[in-house]
Image (tube, rainbow, N blue to C red; front, top):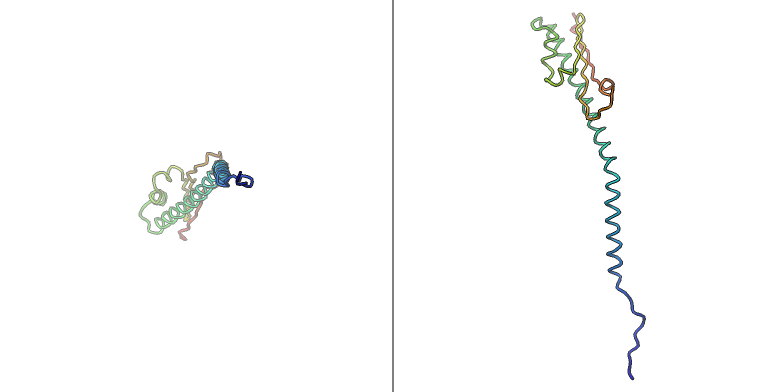
Amino acid sequence: DARIQAGPRRRCAWPRIARVSGDARGQASIELLGLLPLVAVIALVAMTVLASHAADEQAGEAAEAGALALLQGGESPRDAAEHALDEPARKRATITVSGPTVHVRVRPRLALPIPGLAEQLAGEAQADAGQ
C-alpha cells in the first residue's frame, strides 16, 4: 500500500476574513447610526450661529439706512430702516428712533425651537446721525 500521508488538513483563511469584514461592516453601520444624532446637533448649532450673524448684519444695515434718512431729511428714518430689511426680517424687527439715533433689533429665525433663544441671539445695531 502506497498511501500518501498528508498532514493535517488546513482550512482556507478566506471565509474567516470575509466573516470578519462582514462583522466590521455591520459595526461601522451601527457606529454611523450612533453618530447621526451628533452630526444633526452640530448642523443645527451651525445653522443657529449663521442665523444669529445674519440677524446682526440685517440690524446694522437697517440702522444705517435709518440714520442716512435722518441726515438726508426725506424719508422717515423708521420707514427707511424697515425698507432696508426683507419681509421676513421686518416681522422679527424692532425699530426705535430717538433723536438722531436709530436702534434696530432683529430676532433671528432659528431651526432650534428653544424658547427664548431667539431673544438671546437677536442682532442689535445703533446708528447715530450726529445732528
